[in-house]
Image 1 (cartoon, rainbow, N blue to C red):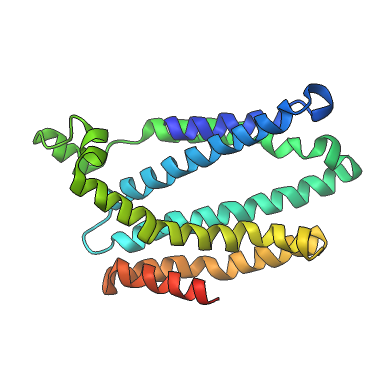
Image 2 (cartoon, one colour):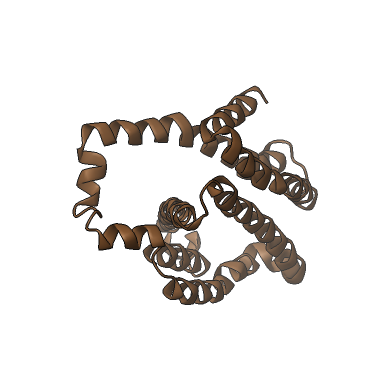
Length: 232
C-alpha cells in the first residue's frame, strides 16, 4: 500500500511542478527528487508483487505466474508511449508548454483504482500459515541484513542476478528511446513506433522464459539472458 501511494503521489506532483521560470533551480531539483521517489516505489512494488504472486502460485509454476508481472510492466510502458502520442496529438504546439502535464495529472485516477484494489487483497496462504505457526520474523530488517549469511545471499542476488537484468531492461526499453531521439535525432513519433513494436514482439517471451525457468531452473535462464544481453 505504501509503495503504490508513493508512486501515485509522486507521479501526480510531477504534473503540478512549478517551472524553472517560476522557482528557478528548485524546479529540476524537485523533479529529480520525485523521480527518485518513483524509482524507490517501483523497486518496492515489483519485489512485493513478485513475492506475493510467487507465494500464491501452484507448486512448480512459480516462474510462469511471476513472469506475468514482467509482461505487464512492459505493457505499461507501451501504454505510456501511446498516451504520450495521443496527448501530443491533442495538444499540438502546446504540448511543451502545458500538454505534457496531462498524463501525470490524469494518473490520479489510476492511483485511486490501485489503492482500492490493494485494500481488497489478503495475505498469501504461505504467509498466513507462517504467522499462525509463529514462524514469521519479529525483526525482519535485522534478520535479513544483520545476519552475515543472509546479508551475503542478499548481496549475491542483488549484484549477481538482479543488477544485470535491471541494466538490460532499462537500457533496452528506456534508454533506447532516449538514444534514438536525442543521439540519432530520429523524430519522436518514429522512435516511439519502433520501441512500441519491439515491446509488442518481446512481451510474449517474458511468459515463455518464465515457463521455461520452471523446467530448467531460474539461474540457467537468468544467466543465459544476461550473457545474451552483454553480447548484444
